[in-house]
Length: 200
Image 1 (cartoon, rainbow, N blue to C red):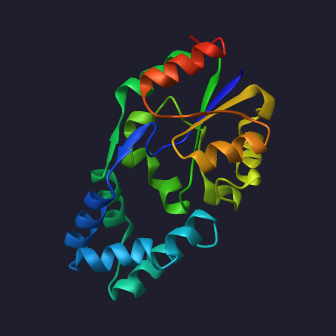
Image 2 (spheres, one colour; image 1 turned 90 degrees about the vertical axis):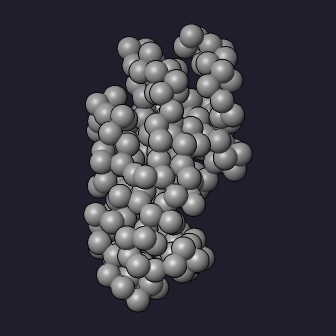
Image 3 (cartoon, helix red, strand yellow; image 1 turned 180 degrees about the vertical axis):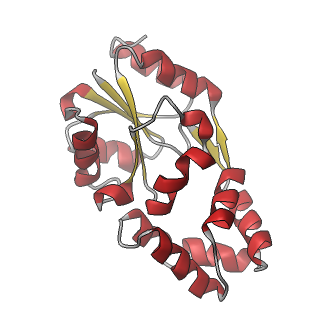
């Protein structure tokens, strides 16, 4: 393996939707139910992940759903409050760097791509220049093009890349695109999988 491509939420970080929703509700003065519906039931998040909405269009769309102005600083604060780096998994990623270059592919939009260093500073410098959101490729996992376009950006080959994700559909999508793949459950399982590819 020359590259190990990681998912973000549920792999490199713990992500709590309830904290995100509650924090943004407090910052915008809206109810948690309204914020949850705006983010997860309106289709806005899916459009952002697919690159249909740029960062400002995404914020504007959320604002229309909530009948208020949603600014990047509040969105970022909510996402950061909900996100906690997993130090053991990051240590594993760092230990690979001299043998298999780490990369990151997450189903998220342009705003996340811009704000990722502020949301999860622990990812950097390890993933500097190698962390991508699906919106940047105009396709979200598990679409094959999401993986292949990401690998083009990383200058990596599918057959020399191990993809790590906690979502079974995304793991299968990676395999369909020609990558090796591991379904993440915990750091111990990942360590064992890496050893199986000679990356212990």
